[in-house]
Length: 244
Length: 244
DNA sequence: CGCAACATTGAAGCTTCTCAATTAAGGTGG
DNA sequence: CCACCTTAATTGAGAAGCTTCAATGTTGCG
Image 1 (tube, chains in turn cyan, red, purple, brown):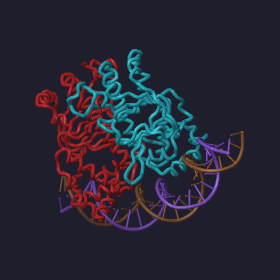
Image 2 (tube, chains in turn green, blue, orange, red):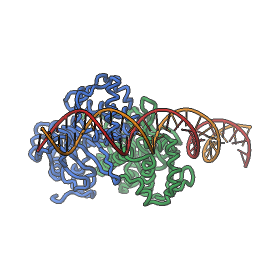
Image 3 (spheres, each protein chain N blue to C red):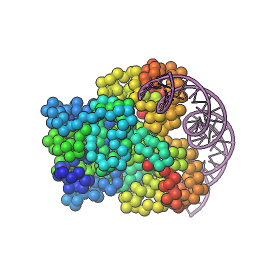
């Protein structure tokens, strides 16, 4: 119990929540969506923490001892490849959950994008809470399921279409995610850099920049500032992105 | 209980296995990896079925009533996009599990690649079995976790490197998966067409063809027949694929 | 044996990447 | 508060790689 749980099948709980998955699910804020009494129990276990731009929550390969729930800001998950290139696996926002796969080490690096606040739980604490509150494990499973859907959407975004189509799909996704967590859907806020977007979409950052210009020229978006994009023609943008 | 379970939180089980995820996990064959007594209970629920090349197990959007475990052959998961292009999400092999996300409809189409045998369960049957056998839900969660890892590997494969690097990574993945399920790692068997591979890697099928030729010319592989590729220099191929 | 689907190969064109220079934004210290 | 410096973003030109279109070759099945 004191020792970090291993992946052996002799775990004491039928479902060890500490083995939860990376979660970027919408509307599943552990600190927000649970009932009052559940929230009370959880908040006793959580420790809040702030990160500023570029700060590392954990590195790829670090022992996966902690589970994070983002309460403000954005976090970038990425892996570095031997050839020096970087693949951004996802962007997580307020309400999203960062856990880990069934491995003992984090499979990617998590860094704050322009500042982030999180509340963190230790694996044993969360496992104990889940034992008392079955709803938690249920929610974690829902999140895992949502993550898988998100990953498959990402695959489709990467595999299909031109650079501009990928970027369109990306903007629409950010817009939808912002709306899902109660924010505003239309002027899309981009906390990440062009290079972050490029590494997410498998493009060069110059290409991302050029595509913003082209989409603006086509009257689909308006680049109001570096980090604020207004979608001026939602339907046309969706039609253009054309994926799914 | 007779009605198909919905995604409401008022489910009768703390964890409804019928809401399991698409599973391409290795070494987690439900019909093979469980204990004898568990296997006995499960086999009573399973109904075996054979599909021949190109047969559709289910279509994208069909109600997700059935869960499949592949016992022989290979299955291709894919989605069609509005622009007519196709994204192959994954290839599943003997021992792999095809379920569904927490949606009521399958999010992709599953088709047999050159023949496949499966054993199928209904969602209610599987939920009932899981109630009696907690190990099953545990295994399903492991599979979901493995699926997420696989999806993230796919993302990296799609986002990074040249066409030849992607193809190298793909060959190494097939080799590893074959070894994982007890097969032979080196002459890699490709049940799928060049076009299937292309749609998996986000390339044109002509590019796949050309890359096979180039990898062969570079002495990394030997194309022994259309569907049998011998890796002649494992280390060099791994070094070249360079991902992760 | 012959047809149909699959695969290879070639050439042209286009998108994206790379390299490079310039401009804009953000943060720090005077 | 402004000047400066650093980082981020834009834009241009050339090169590389991939895709498309087209023709040919191969495999496998009825």
